[in-house]
Length: 242
Image 1: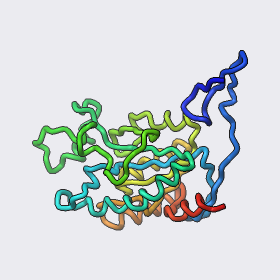
Image 2: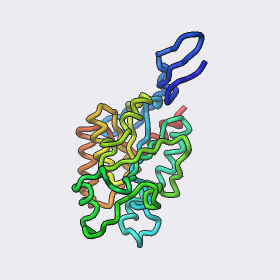
Image 3: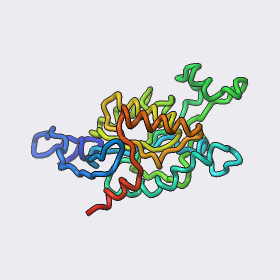
Image 4: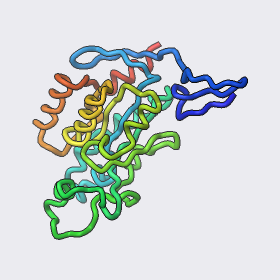
């Protein structure tokens, strides 16, 4: 027997002179945890954790180099506990990070302007893939089996293969974490919602350098319109429940 596909939930099985197209039907692995505005139950077999922009540029270890990094580093500790727990249950970890082309050929002026307002005369590209500033912070070392997706907009679903990767693995529920919660995290979550995914925001695994009212508005909008909000200890407790 030979499997042909990206994951155990999305594979054809080739054996005994025929091809099995049932795509690895599996029993659910459900967990339940507290969330706002309602407790939720999810299937670990169809869930992924999406970690957004936990990169050196945003979360540099030296706040003197980047004063905003102090706030942006807050998700590191809870993520360092949650990620291994999810990995141990075979939940995919998706690193969704800025990684622009060196020539920025796919970036319109509006995107370039947003990150160059204070240096409009500087021709240097912004967050070019493969450069030190785009690396994931050391404390959250990725594993070989993790999924990496480079993004070029505030939302990680525009001009990227993220949606195709998730659908190929039959993922329908996304846990969101990272920075900035009111910008890249929120807009990626909103687009996921518009695409039909179940969305859960992990509030303690998110942060922003924006004023506090930006976080408040983001949490309100997610709870009211786009999904659910919880904290990582609730998920960890559910994972550890007998």
